Image 1 (cartoon, one colour):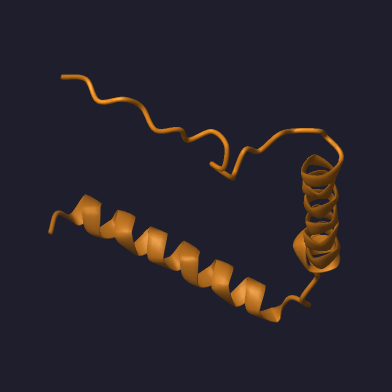
Image 2: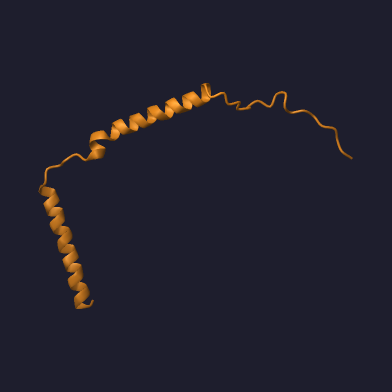
Length: 78
């Protein structure tokens, strides 16, 4: 390995080791997801359920799931 490349790898490895040691001695501070993650998830589920509940019951969309009355036999073409 070239001396320059070896030195660069050593510097990188040392930097990673220093960062790991520094972070190991820090107190754990909760981030945004630790504080609010569950509430954001629950809020999204509530909005999702409310919107689809409205669409399925109140929007007046005819889904047309039943073919009864729409499927009629046709005469054969010869």
